[in-house]
Length: 272
Ligand SMILES: C[S@@+](CC[C@H](N)C(=O)[O-])C[C@H]1O[C@@H](n2cnc3c(N)ncnc32)[C@H](O)[C@@H]1O
Image (tube, rainbow, N blue to C red; front, top):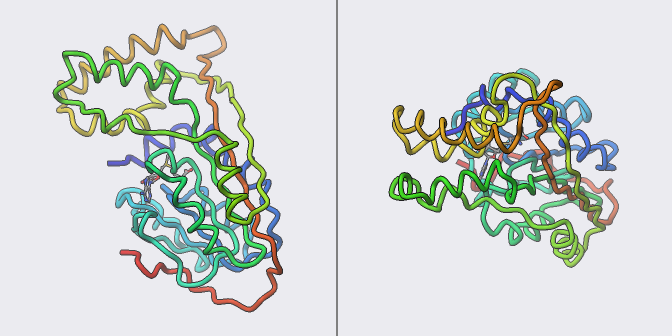
């Protein structure tokens, strides 16, 4: 279960990669924009501000996230839909598809990419970004703790299946699908404030599947152990706590003339 409030606590740090990703999208006046895994919708609204003439549609499989996003639906050009991105498909060609910080939750997502390219109108853009930091202490500590005798029976390996490819893998796949591809990686050094900020960050994402299966007492015990490990791995310094965070970025452009007539109804054919 996602918690939009906890997720938004580090909104600035989470928005920056989205801004740097979408800055590389060269679309002038797209008519249709889809944000797959839109979460609480704040960044979907940014897309609508950049392209006020576009119909912008956010899709997410979390009822909590879509409920939060629907509070932002005041502009008529924005709509949100509860659906799993693995099943959803648009009812017309799309000029811009974005997918920010989502694909790490979708095993085998490389296989989805050619399908997404096939949805693009001629001249359309596909842009996605995902964390590539699963070898870092914030994640390895979770996996180690879950595998320990204390937690093994409660926390199966399923909570730790997140993964990202390297930029070169995405570049190969999308080039083979006929796109011009810009792929890169960046390691941000987030300087976080407050007590145990890495734990607070993880509560909005990586810890979510863990806490979902523990009762209150178990969750408190697990968090105490995780907090201790995070304090050692990411010590508080006089100016804050440094969280290095690697992210992978991909922008693919489908060549062609974008001026062809097309529809603007984005509501998915298999959405639910
Ligand atoms: C880390 S949040 C990112 C939200 C938003 N894109 C942002 O950058 O603020 C990940 C989102 O992906 C969604 N998600 C994960 N798997 C999904 C799937 N299979 N289909 C649709 N949404 C999915 C989650 O519900 C969650 O809202």
